Image (cartoon, rainbow, N blue to C red; front, side, top):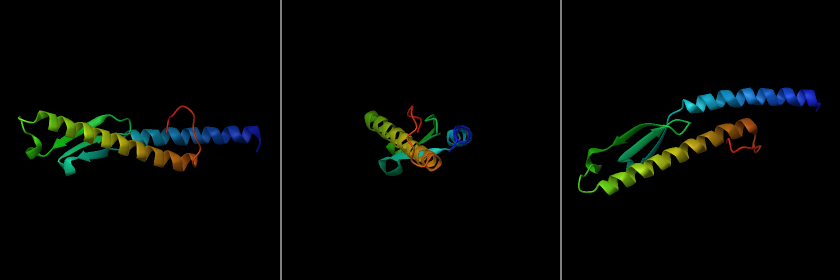
Length: 103
């Protein structure tokens, strides 16, 4: 493959990756804990969009449990968002390891 053709392919892949990153940034991903009693939705940039709690988990006598549920749900949502990103980017890069930890 000529250097010029390879450069064109890389530019094409960069455009596709940018578009995919923009799509992922707008894609809501949810994580849950406590059997669904707590759910957190994040976007592809790992920004928390919403937190939902079932009324029965809101116990003023047990704030620590509520905090643990929220932390677990946030971590689950971030893990799910990362997995989605790796899946989508992996399809684009066909398993190629891209430097910089972007994917």
